Image: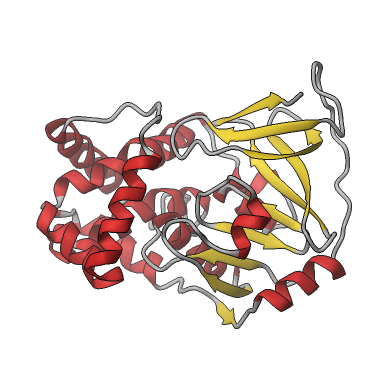
Amino acid sequence: MTPVLYHYPMSPYSEKLRLAMGLSGIAWSSIQVSPQPPRGTLDQVLGGYRRIPVLQRGAHFYCDTRLAFEALHDDDPSVTHLDADDETLRDWAEREIFFAVFSIISPLKVFGFLARQMGILGVRRFMRDRSQMMRNATLKVLTAERAREAVGDFIAHLGARLSSTPYLSGAAPGYLDLCCCHPLWMARQIDRRVASAWPLTVSKWMKRMDALGHGEVLPATWDLVLQDIGDNRSSVVVRVVAEPYQPGERVGVAPSDYARDETVGELVSLDKNRIVISRTLDSGKLIYLHFPWKGFELRRLQ
Protein backbone atom coordinates (compact mmCIF):
# COMPACT_ATOMS: atom_id res chain seq x y z
CA MET A 1 0.00 0.00 0.00
CA THR A 2 1.52 3.29 -1.16
CA PRO A 3 1.67 5.94 1.59
CA VAL A 4 0.06 9.29 0.88
CA LEU A 5 1.58 12.45 2.33
CA TYR A 6 -0.54 15.57 2.85
CA HIS A 7 1.94 18.44 2.94
CA TYR A 8 2.94 21.83 1.57
CA PRO A 9 6.38 22.79 0.23
CA MET A 10 7.52 25.25 2.92
CA SER A 11 6.48 23.07 5.88
CA PRO A 12 9.56 21.98 7.91
CA TYR A 13 7.85 18.95 9.41
CA SER A 14 6.73 17.98 5.91
CA GLU A 15 10.37 18.14 4.81
CA LYS A 16 11.19 15.82 7.70
CA LEU A 17 8.86 13.19 6.24
CA ARG A 18 9.83 13.88 2.62
CA LEU A 19 13.45 13.15 3.59
CA ALA A 20 12.23 10.09 5.48
CA MET A 21 10.82 8.79 2.18
CA GLY A 22 14.20 9.37 0.54
CA LEU A 23 16.01 7.71 3.44
CA SER A 24 13.77 4.64 3.20
CA GLY A 25 13.68 4.56 -0.60
CA ILE A 26 9.89 4.58 -0.56
CA ALA A 27 7.58 5.48 -3.43
CA TRP A 28 4.80 7.72 -2.12
CA SER A 29 1.83 9.72 -3.30
CA SER A 30 1.75 13.48 -2.81
CA ILE A 31 -1.24 15.67 -2.07
CA GLN A 32 -0.29 19.29 -1.52
CA VAL A 33 -2.61 21.25 0.73
CA SER A 34 -2.93 24.87 1.78
CA PRO A 35 -0.59 26.13 4.57
CA GLN A 36 -3.73 26.92 6.57
CA PRO A 37 -7.36 25.75 6.72
CA PRO A 38 -9.75 25.39 5.05
CA ARG A 39 -8.38 22.33 3.29
CA GLY A 40 -11.52 20.89 1.77
CA THR A 41 -11.81 17.11 1.90
CA LEU A 42 -8.89 16.74 4.31
CA ASP A 43 -10.77 18.82 6.90
CA GLN A 44 -13.69 16.39 6.64
CA VAL A 45 -11.34 13.46 7.19
CA LEU A 46 -9.46 14.92 10.15
CA GLY A 47 -12.25 16.81 11.86
CA GLY A 48 -10.68 19.61 13.88
CA TYR A 49 -7.04 18.52 13.62
CA ARG A 50 -5.13 21.10 11.59
CA ARG A 51 -1.42 20.34 11.77
CA ILE A 52 0.50 19.34 8.67
CA PRO A 53 1.91 16.93 7.56
CA VAL A 54 -0.37 13.93 7.84
CA LEU A 55 0.58 10.51 6.50
CA GLN A 56 -2.04 8.08 5.23
CA ARG A 57 -1.70 4.35 4.76
CA GLY A 58 -4.98 2.85 3.61
CA ALA A 59 -7.64 3.72 6.18
CA HIS A 60 -5.06 4.90 8.73
CA PHE A 61 -4.02 8.55 9.14
CA TYR A 62 -0.96 9.37 11.26
CA CYS A 63 -1.20 12.81 12.85
CA ASP A 64 2.37 13.00 14.13
CA THR A 65 5.72 12.68 12.37
CA ARG A 66 7.12 10.16 14.87
CA LEU A 67 4.14 7.86 14.38
CA ALA A 68 4.30 8.48 10.62
CA PHE A 69 7.97 7.45 10.53
CA GLU A 70 7.09 4.26 12.42
CA ALA A 71 4.21 3.64 9.99
CA LEU A 72 6.69 3.71 7.11
CA HIS A 73 8.43 0.84 8.90
CA ASP A 74 5.31 -1.28 9.58
CA ASP A 75 4.54 0.46 12.88
CA ASP A 76 7.87 -0.56 14.38
CA PRO A 77 8.53 1.72 17.41
CA SER A 78 12.19 0.71 17.55
CA VAL A 79 13.02 2.88 14.52
CA THR A 80 12.30 6.04 16.55
CA HIS A 81 13.78 4.83 19.83
CA LEU A 82 16.42 7.22 21.19
CA ASP A 83 18.52 7.03 24.33
CA ALA A 84 18.01 9.70 26.98
CA ASP A 85 20.65 12.10 25.61
CA ASP A 86 19.43 11.80 22.03
CA GLU A 87 15.82 12.26 23.11
CA THR A 88 16.85 15.47 24.89
CA LEU A 89 18.52 16.67 21.69
CA ARG A 90 15.47 15.78 19.61
CA ASP A 91 13.18 17.62 22.01
CA TRP A 92 15.49 20.65 21.96
CA ALA A 93 15.42 20.72 18.17
CA GLU A 94 11.69 20.25 17.71
CA ARG A 95 10.33 22.16 20.67
CA GLU A 96 12.65 25.14 21.20
CA ILE A 97 14.83 25.51 18.09
CA PHE A 98 11.91 24.98 15.70
CA PHE A 99 10.45 28.32 16.82
CA ALA A 100 13.72 30.04 17.72
CA VAL A 101 15.27 29.89 14.22
CA PHE A 102 13.04 32.72 13.07
CA SER A 103 14.88 35.06 15.46
CA ILE A 104 18.14 34.69 13.53
CA ILE A 105 16.49 35.94 10.34
CA SER A 106 15.34 39.49 9.65
CA PRO A 107 11.55 40.01 9.51
CA LEU A 108 11.94 41.43 5.99
CA LYS A 109 13.55 38.18 4.84
CA VAL A 110 10.72 36.18 6.39
CA PHE A 111 8.10 38.38 4.73
CA GLY A 112 9.88 38.17 1.37
CA PHE A 113 10.08 34.39 1.57
CA LEU A 114 6.39 34.04 2.43
CA ALA A 115 5.39 36.49 -0.31
CA ARG A 116 7.27 34.43 -2.88
CA GLN A 117 5.50 31.30 -1.67
CA MET A 118 1.93 32.57 -1.46
CA GLY A 119 1.66 36.19 -2.61
CA ILE A 120 0.94 39.30 -0.53
CA LEU A 121 -2.70 38.42 0.17
CA GLY A 122 -1.68 34.89 1.01
CA VAL A 123 0.81 36.22 3.55
CA ARG A 124 -1.91 38.24 5.25
CA ARG A 125 -4.17 35.19 5.48
CA PHE A 126 -1.27 33.05 6.70
CA MET A 127 -0.20 35.49 9.42
CA ARG A 128 -3.77 35.98 10.60
CA ASP A 129 -4.22 32.20 10.78
CA ARG A 130 -0.97 31.66 12.69
CA SER A 131 -1.91 34.40 15.15
CA GLN A 132 -5.20 32.64 15.87
CA MET A 133 -3.46 29.26 16.04
CA MET A 134 -1.12 30.48 18.80
CA ARG A 135 -3.78 32.39 20.74
CA ASN A 136 -4.33 29.69 23.37
CA ALA A 137 -0.88 28.11 23.07
CA THR A 138 0.86 26.87 26.19
CA LEU A 139 4.34 27.11 24.66
CA LYS A 140 6.97 29.16 26.42
CA VAL A 141 8.21 31.62 23.78
CA LEU A 142 11.83 32.75 24.07
CA THR A 143 12.82 36.37 23.78
CA ALA A 144 14.61 37.26 20.54
CA GLU A 145 17.96 37.50 22.32
CA ARG A 146 17.55 34.19 24.13
CA ALA A 147 16.32 32.53 20.92
CA ARG A 148 19.45 33.63 19.06
CA GLU A 149 21.59 32.27 21.88
CA ALA A 150 19.69 28.98 21.85
CA VAL A 151 20.14 28.53 18.10
CA GLY A 152 23.85 29.35 18.42
CA ASP A 153 24.24 26.81 21.22
CA PHE A 154 22.31 24.20 19.24
CA ILE A 155 24.41 24.61 16.09
CA ALA A 156 27.63 24.54 18.13
CA HIS A 157 26.47 21.32 19.79
CA LEU A 158 25.73 19.74 16.42
CA GLY A 159 29.08 20.89 15.08
CA ALA A 160 30.97 19.28 17.95
CA ARG A 161 29.04 16.04 17.70
CA LEU A 162 29.39 15.80 13.93
CA SER A 163 33.17 16.25 14.15
CA SER A 164 33.50 12.55 14.96
CA THR A 165 30.63 10.99 13.01
CA PRO A 166 28.97 11.70 9.63
CA TYR A 167 25.47 11.61 11.08
CA LEU A 168 23.93 12.25 14.48
CA SER A 169 22.62 8.68 14.37
CA GLY A 170 26.10 7.27 13.63
CA ALA A 171 27.52 5.94 10.40
CA ALA A 172 24.16 6.20 8.63
CA PRO A 173 21.33 8.74 8.85
CA GLY A 174 18.40 7.98 11.12
CA TYR A 175 15.42 9.44 12.91
CA LEU A 176 17.49 11.82 15.08
CA ASP A 177 19.04 13.38 11.96
CA LEU A 178 15.60 14.06 10.50
CA CYS A 179 14.44 15.71 13.73
CA CYS A 180 17.46 18.02 14.01
CA CYS A 181 17.70 18.84 10.32
CA HIS A 182 14.32 20.32 9.51
CA PRO A 183 14.46 23.48 11.71
CA LEU A 184 17.79 24.41 10.09
CA TRP A 185 16.35 23.56 6.66
CA MET A 186 13.60 26.09 7.34
CA ALA A 187 16.08 28.82 8.32
CA ARG A 188 18.15 28.14 5.20
CA GLN A 189 15.06 28.20 2.98
CA ILE A 190 14.23 31.70 4.17
CA ASP A 191 17.76 33.09 4.05
CA ARG A 192 20.57 30.94 2.63
CA ARG A 193 23.15 33.32 4.10
CA VAL A 194 22.51 32.01 7.63
CA ALA A 195 24.34 28.80 6.71
CA SER A 196 27.58 30.74 6.13
CA ALA A 197 28.02 31.03 9.91
CA TRP A 198 27.56 27.30 10.56
CA PRO A 199 30.53 25.05 11.36
CA LEU A 200 31.80 23.14 8.34
CA THR A 201 30.73 19.85 9.93
CA VAL A 202 27.13 21.09 10.12
CA SER A 203 27.12 22.42 6.55
CA LYS A 204 28.47 19.12 5.19
CA TRP A 205 25.92 17.19 7.24
CA MET A 206 23.10 19.31 5.82
CA LYS A 207 24.36 18.58 2.30
CA ARG A 208 24.36 14.86 3.06
CA MET A 209 20.81 15.15 4.35
CA ASP A 210 19.75 17.04 1.20
CA ALA A 211 21.27 14.23 -0.86
CA LEU A 212 18.77 11.76 0.61
CA GLY A 213 16.18 13.28 -1.71
CA HIS A 214 12.47 12.63 -1.45
CA GLY A 215 12.19 9.19 -3.00
CA GLU A 216 9.82 8.43 -5.87
CA VAL A 217 6.84 10.80 -5.86
CA LEU A 218 3.66 9.49 -7.50
CA PRO A 219 0.57 11.47 -8.54
CA ALA A 220 -2.51 11.22 -6.34
CA THR A 221 -6.13 12.30 -6.48
CA TRP A 222 -8.87 12.28 -3.87
CA ASP A 223 -10.71 9.59 -5.83
CA LEU A 224 -7.68 7.31 -5.54
CA VAL A 225 -7.31 8.17 -1.85
CA LEU A 226 -10.93 7.26 -1.09
CA GLN A 227 -10.56 4.05 -3.07
CA ASP A 228 -7.43 3.24 -1.08
CA ILE A 229 -9.38 3.70 2.15
CA GLY A 230 -12.03 1.25 0.99
CA ASP A 231 -9.51 -1.30 -0.27
CA ASN A 232 -7.33 -1.26 2.84
CA ARG A 233 -9.46 -1.58 5.95
CA SER A 234 -6.90 -3.35 8.08
CA SER A 235 -8.24 -3.56 11.60
CA VAL A 236 -6.58 -1.97 14.61
CA VAL A 237 -5.65 -4.35 17.38
CA VAL A 238 -7.30 -3.06 20.54
CA ARG A 239 -4.62 -2.24 23.07
CA VAL A 240 -5.11 -1.70 26.79
CA VAL A 241 -7.63 1.07 27.41
CA ALA A 242 -7.27 2.27 30.97
CA GLU A 243 -10.15 3.57 33.04
CA PRO A 244 -12.03 5.84 32.93
CA TYR A 245 -11.90 5.27 29.16
CA GLN A 246 -13.64 2.44 27.34
CA PRO A 247 -13.27 1.20 23.75
CA GLY A 248 -15.97 2.68 21.54
CA GLU A 249 -16.80 5.71 23.66
CA ARG A 250 -16.87 9.15 22.09
CA VAL A 251 -13.79 11.24 22.85
CA GLY A 252 -12.04 14.43 21.83
CA VAL A 253 -8.31 14.59 21.06
CA ALA A 254 -6.32 17.83 20.80
CA PRO A 255 -2.67 18.98 20.97
CA SER A 256 -1.76 20.38 24.38
CA ASP A 257 0.78 23.00 23.20
CA TYR A 258 -0.43 24.92 20.11
CA ALA A 259 -2.95 24.54 17.27
CA ARG A 260 -5.18 23.07 19.94
CA ASP A 261 -8.16 22.29 17.73
CA GLU A 262 -10.04 19.18 18.82
CA THR A 263 -10.90 16.11 16.74
CA VAL A 264 -13.85 13.97 17.82
CA GLY A 265 -14.24 10.25 17.23
CA GLU A 266 -14.72 6.85 18.87
CA LEU A 267 -11.88 5.51 20.99
CA VAL A 268 -10.38 2.40 19.40
CA SER A 269 -7.20 1.90 21.39
CA LEU A 270 -5.09 3.63 23.99
CA ASP A 271 -1.71 2.78 25.46
CA LYS A 272 1.16 4.76 26.97
CA ASN A 273 2.35 5.91 23.55
CA ARG A 274 -0.63 6.20 21.24
CA ILE A 275 -4.28 7.20 20.95
CA VAL A 276 -6.30 5.78 18.06
CA ILE A 277 -9.80 6.97 17.28
CA SER A 278 -12.13 6.06 14.44
CA ARG A 279 -14.27 8.39 12.35
CA THR A 280 -16.92 7.63 9.77
CA LEU A 281 -16.78 9.68 6.58
CA ASP A 282 -19.86 10.95 4.76
CA SER A 283 -19.29 8.13 2.27
CA GLY A 284 -19.71 5.61 5.10
CA LYS A 285 -16.02 4.60 5.03
CA LEU A 286 -14.38 4.04 8.40
CA ILE A 287 -10.98 5.62 9.04
CA TYR A 288 -8.54 5.56 11.94
CA LEU A 289 -6.62 8.57 13.24
CA HIS A 290 -3.39 7.95 15.18
CA PHE A 291 -2.13 10.49 17.73
CA PRO A 292 0.73 10.31 20.24
CA TRP A 293 -0.21 10.36 23.94
CA LYS A 294 2.66 12.72 24.73
CA GLY A 295 1.76 16.29 23.82
CA PHE A 296 -1.95 15.59 23.37
CA GLU A 297 -5.03 15.74 25.55
CA LEU A 298 -7.86 13.21 25.62
CA ARG A 299 -11.29 13.88 27.07
CA ARG A 300 -14.52 11.96 27.34
CA LEU A 301 -17.56 13.44 25.67
CA GLN A 302 -21.05 13.11 27.06
